[in-house]
Image (tube, rainbow, N blue to C red; front, side, top):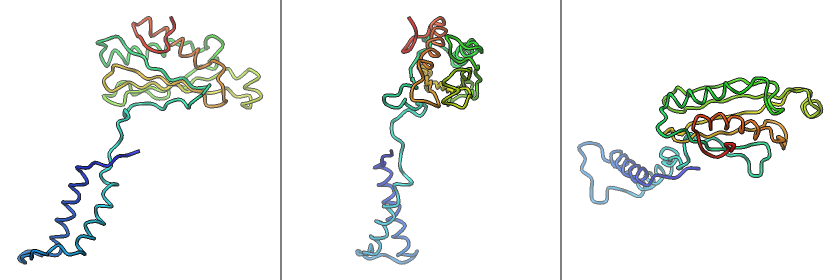
Length: 207
């Protein structure tokens, strides 16, 4: 969704008027008091109607906000966690990587038995700091056999850091199925305990 910038539209009207004026009054020819003819006004109006595509501005939604989970979803969890006050950008990235790498490759609590891999990491960038991880089920259960062709289920964890570093958004979701049977919750609870030990606070941390 976009909104028009009033200032930009006014500026566009001025520019369009000036262009129409210059076109109908070449250098050296003085205009009369009725120099802006009806044709010129139609030209200006037509140009102004084309302006929105060039001067539209984004809404106030955060640039780095990750997608919300669908309403009523049973296979997606989104949470906001907060690093300790005063955590530097480099330390924040190190903490997140350390927590992710501490997650056992063999899984835990009967989830993620197929391991995981980090597929994207831009935590060291000056902006757009994020990390994405793929988790896989063992693929040996009846659900994988009957509903996924005997292949492991794949879940996605996306982590994005707010521009000022004060908040970190987590979104864990399953690619297949209407229900995750608690898989995403168990995953975030484990990661949350590791973060809590490092002084993090926020939604989703086990007590």
